[in-house]
Image (tube, rainbow, N blue to C red):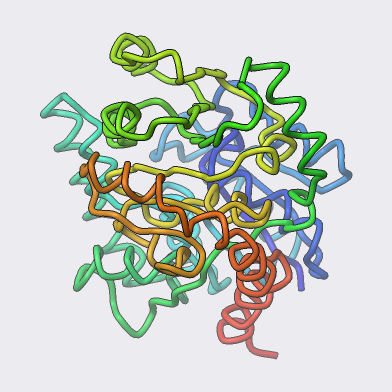
Length: 365
């Protein structure tokens, strides 16, 4: 099948990064496209390096008619049989093209609209997000062939806003084998690079350092977990503020890293204190590396972490509960179960098989 994956842009992000494992695992004739360039479009560069067909329509905004005509012409010339769109603008463009041409389109939604709005301090920006969400729901309900959400939690957040008969829950997947590493060698590297004392428990957090990620809750929990060093990987607008909040030398700030898959196996527990998350792929990666997970019971996280089996779930914003879960003596024994669950439920092959079933529903012979 001639398949077009369409995204708003191809910079480094959760939804955008899915194009890489999908391109490696699919048997379809795939092109990955984007509406515009954001930053360096690093994912686009990597796809091209791997020999994957890419196209950039260079849209200036949602109303760029010339770019939309380029998009429509490409779909016609390449005889695209299905468009799988990710994120709001790409989903709306694809649905409009479906209305005009009859080419079926699927829209994937990866984040809660409420979470997106909560990041904005401007009332005008929040109003604009509301307008965009209403337009998106109207468009997808009318002209998309199916709507994919990454978790049942996200489906429930949208509630009656989407036509129930069109909605499919499809959990994402990852290349599990990328995270199989030698623990001893990785741990030695972490001890050298970040000054982690030998023999102490090492708790890892990987996150964009912005509001709603719960890093302030983690920092409040740190003094309650003696004998544990905390490594925080990531960067963002809240970094300076949160670094100033840290009251102990047991917190290491690693900044943005491109080698997270090489570092996970040397840690003892993965901590994810986010206050709102639809389906964080980083938890799949931690489990694939054999780490038990301590995370907030929000969004789609309970669909990833099995309480008492692959980790612990705690109320969002509860630093005392977070600290108690990190310090749980039963936690180390859950790493093997976490790895097994990642291999069984969240591999690239399992995820692509779930998507293929939706494709088969939409595209008839």
